[in-house]
Length: 66
Image (tube, rainbow, N blue to C red; front, side, top):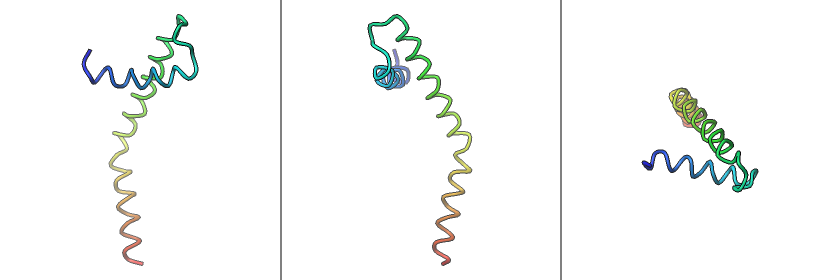
């Protein structure tokens, strides 16, 4: 599998390992669910990246003016 697939599934596997035993049959489902939540959070971050950047720049500009 490409690294773009292995890395998120590896991280999701580590997180899922804290909550579900790797020997259970539904570990793969939990791992996939966690990976989908991570993907949704990443997409939400990309959608709002401009707003976040503007908010950070606005705060820095206010600090310099004071």
